[in-house]
Amino acid sequence: MSADRVVFGERDVAFGYFYLTVQNVLCTFIGVLGYSFLARSVSQVDVGAVAGLALLASLFQLLSDFGLSSSLAKFVSELMGRGENPSGYFLSAFVFRASLALVLSLLLFSFPDRFSVLLF
Image 1: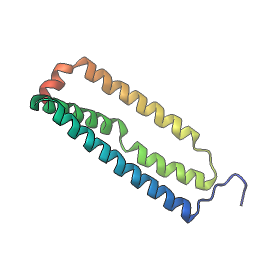
Image 2 (image 1 turned 45 degrees about the horizontal axis):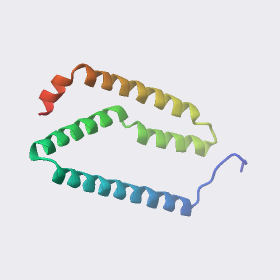
Image 3 (image 1 turned 90 degrees about the vertical axis):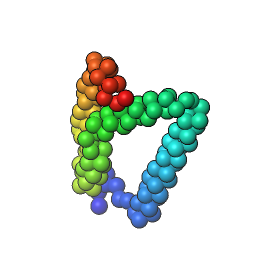
């Protein structure tokens, strides 16, 4: 086995799975607590506005990802397993996501009235 190859054991995989599961549960819990706190502190009309903005943010986050996160994790781990350097994939993914986020942001800033009519 070469010195530059990284080997993960069962313990590392189990710890990674546990870490991701706990992170997902905590993020969901914090989101629910934050939304419930916000819903109690503002009026009913404002809760609808917050729900619409959260929907818009989730939609843009979904559109800007295009499944790139999961595919990047798959291909990078495969390349690391073969002992290849995956740094080019990170740069490509960053440039793609940054340009897509820029286009979506420009759309939102260019047509805010249309998005507000669509959502509300």
